[in-house]
Image 1 (tube, helix red, strand yellow):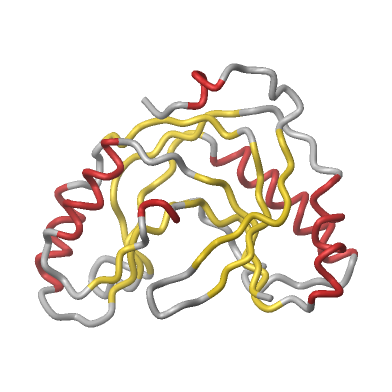
Image 2 (cartoon, rainbow, N blue to C red):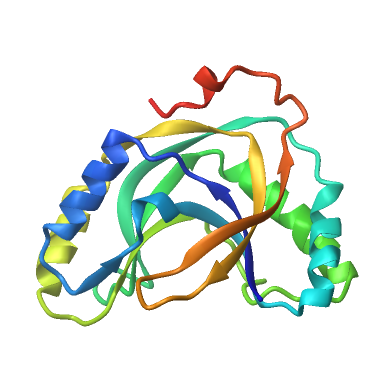
Length: 194
């Protein structure tokens, strides 16, 4: 099964507004469904069913305090002249995301499970993939105009192992396992994006 480890991102009015701005650029882009938005920490790709417990085991020792992630600005990979992936930047919370990823990566490698993306990690939130370069200049202008826009802050309480099922309408993500922060005692009010 196709697996990845990530952080759920709550939908906020500001984030949905950014989706609309990118959509209205008129470029040939496949946007992520807002209910599927997440920060990918590790993409594992295809993992045999008999190894899923080992993946869960590699996450189970993770200890972290809840922390804030602040989203800011649009950008693109690999660069702005030939964008393939449009993303929202992360300005606060990068260090914690890197530490969590590093811990899980080491645990996976101890179990001889090699993620597909074990290279450099640049924390971001993918919002769309460019399908062709039709009207690409509009998209580039939109990204440039929104490079420094504040999108909001949310609190990270869980790290989740997702199963991704590809369908013609887009991927369906199912939670298989999650690790909560060690100080998860806060009220649900604290978890809203502002």
